[in-house]
Length: 69
Image (cartoon, rainbow, N blue to C red; front, side, top):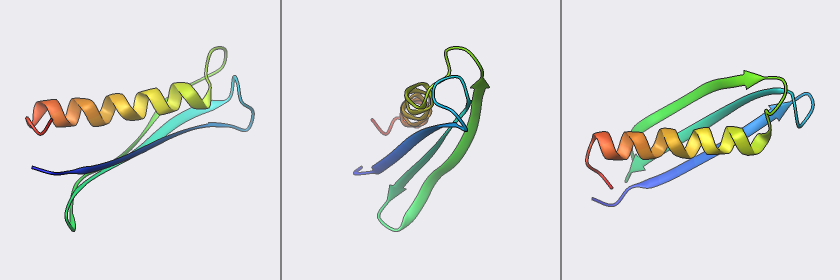
């Protein structure tokens, strides 16, 4: 099965050390299989890259759980 996956991370109001989160979208054709966002944390060590890593991990977990990878 061919699926398209998008993910992104954010950190604000400052990067690094701000509030960090992510958003993901997985689609098969016009059907949305996963639309999810999440909060990662705030403070020391939090960056937009940490948010992006959390996003790709969420996508990969979804694909593996549903055997779509």
